[in-house]
Image (cartoon, rainbow over all chains, first blue to last red; front, side, top):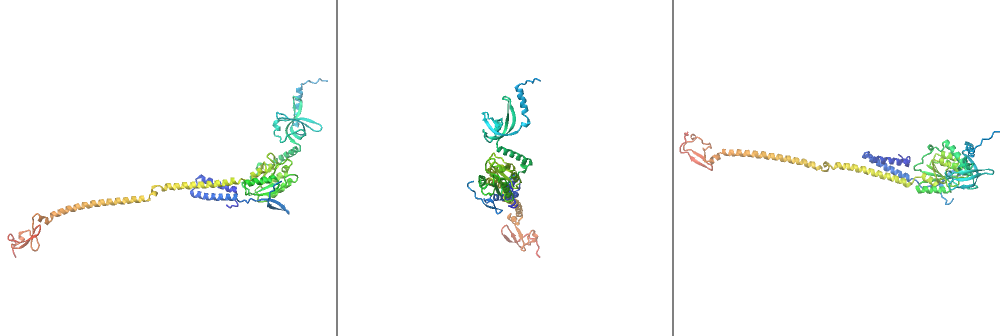
Length: 78
Length: 404
């Protein structure tokens, strides 16, 4: 399971499933520890996904027939 | 010449009514100028619709006019849609108005309805065509004027909900003739990128003419064809555009579109934290239960006091030893008793005891015991042993042994 391949939604679903299984209480101790490890890893992954952004605001501009992105400076007035 | 049949006014009016209230006069759209407009206290609207040469009375009941988005007044040119009818008490025919649209707007409205119907029939607005918005987009594209209020609203809402979210503004002209081709070009640009997960198509509020770019057929088709989910946020709450119907999700305003496109960071973080807490709680609970199970077992006596068994075994050994000792002591005392008995017997048999009773043993010098007078001769020396000590005696008489 690569961090790139899995989306936040998938990761959180998996995490939910892990928690559900654990709460179910029918798993063995060994299995529950494995699930716990998996869950912690998924939670870490979810957190990483949430924090992967850079707060970039860009604008797509046309320059010499090519699209380029530039930081977007918001103008105060219309 | 036949005398015409006499009928009553009511009968005539009924005949006129029947001839006027025909399908051809149902659902007719009539353009004209309002005069004698009167909004009665009952809520119904009464007015006359006129043009240069003709006039017709019109009524718009309260239930119909409640939905009007403008206040009609004398001099307004409007398009009314309704049916012809006869008001029998006054013998007047009039239009019963279902809908009233300001002129210009009226024409646009009909264009709008026609296009909406056409595209709906094509299935362009079908629910199954709508794509689900990503739960957490990687980057959001905003197609709008880079200088408008809409872009500011969208960015501030996104910033508030998800401070670190990446945003790409794709400039487009959002009103006038140049609007539709510019919006379509922007959609195509966005579609050509691989980093956008959702597109917000936004424009602030304006008149219906100003929003008209979003009622363009090609814009609608470009939205439907866009591989990236599109959220529309055009105008105000009440403004519906063709773009709204073609979009995957319609928001009433640009801010609302941003709201729908971006999850709230705190909600998601809280969700992750909550799951994390549950994880820890459940594992702690499991561990606690297992520990208790182990504790329950180990608290049994065997585990709790392993030395007890040893002590018990030692005790048994001790018991065995003491039993053996007892038996041995018993045996010993029995043996001792027997020995004493024997000793007693032995004692009674002892020559010393006999001597004690006054008997004596007579021995010749060679130690042989004299039991017969014939063993000794007179004059012979013998030893007489008493209880204590012995006597050396010479036989004076009785010895019958003959001397050799």
